[in-house]
Amino acid sequence: MKGCPSSSSRTLMDLFKQPAAKRLKRHSSPPLSPSSSSSKDASSLSASTLTSEERLKMEFNKALAKSKRNLKRCSDVVSKSTSKGIDGVGYVKLKELLVEETWLEVLPDELEKPYAEKLCKFVESEICSGSVPIYPPQNLIFNALNTTSFDRVKAVIIGQDPYHGPGQAMGLSFSVPNGVKVPSSLVNIYKELQQDLGCSIPSSGNLEKWAVQGVLLLNAVLTGMQYQANSHAKKGWELFTDAVIETISQKKRGVIFLLWGNYAQAKARLVDETKHHVLKAVHPSGLSANRGFFGCRHFSRTNQLLEKMGTSPIDWQL
Image (cartoon, rainbow, N blue to C red; front, side):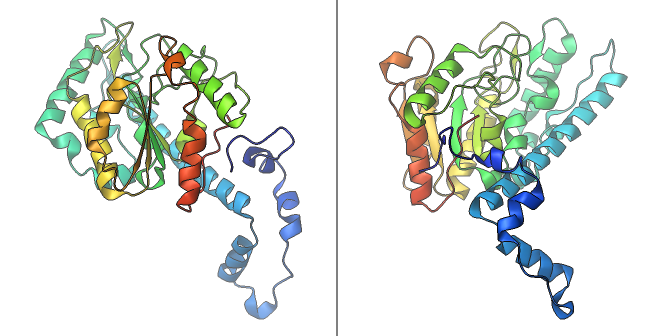
C-alpha cells in the first residue's frame, strides 16, 4: 500500500526531480517511420510508455499548475480592487473569488442565493471597516475549492473556521503557509501520520500537496476576525459549505470523509454513507488527541479504501 515510502524508496517527487530524458530512458521507444510520425501518434506512443508513477506525477503537475492559475486570477482581481480602494482597502465580491470552473458547474448560482447575498454584504462590511483584520486574505477565501477541483476530490477533511493569528490562515483547513509555526493540532496530525504510515514529520505546515492530490481541506466557515475564533460563524458560510458537502455526496461516489471532533462529525448527516465512506475520530487538538485520534489510522485506512475502489492512493508525505 502506498502512503509514506521509506527513505530508501523513490517518492514521486524524487522521480520528477530527474531530467526528463533520464526518467524516460528506460521507456524509450523505437523511432517512428515517416509514415507514422504525426504529432498525434507520437504523443499517444509517448504517453503509453509512461509508468503509472509518471502518469500520476503528470496529473499532479497539471492540477498544481491549474491551482496556481486560479490563485493568480484571484490575486490579480484583489490587487486591482485594492489599488482603487480607499486607504489601500479594497473589496472583491465573493462570487468573483470562486474561479474553479468545475465547482461553478456543480454549484450553479449558489452565491446568488438570498443567504449568500447577505453573507457577501456582511463580509464586505467586515473587510471594508478596516478596524480588525479578516482572515484569510481575500484571494485565499475559496482556496480549498480553487485548489482541489470537484473532479479530483477523493477525500474531505473538515475543519471549523480559519486560524485567527496573523499570517496563519491560507484557506485550507489545518494548513498554514510555509515559514509559519505548525499549530498544535497539525503537529498531532503529523504524529499520527508517522505512527500510521511511517511518514517523516515535516517542518512546514503547508498541506497544499494533499489538496492538489484530491484531499479537499474544507473549513465550515471560510472567514474570521483576527484573534476571535468563530467570529464569522452563523453568518451564512455554513449554508454554503454544507451545499459543497451535499453536492459531493450527491454527484460523486467513493469519497472518504475524515471527520475529526464533534463539530465535523455533525456533517455526517449530509453524506450518503451508502455511496461514500465516513471515518470518525476525536479532534487532533492537544486537549483530545490522546482520547482517540492517535491510533485512528485514518490515513492508511483512506488509502486502503481508495485502492480497493481502484483509485490511486494519497501520497501523504509532505
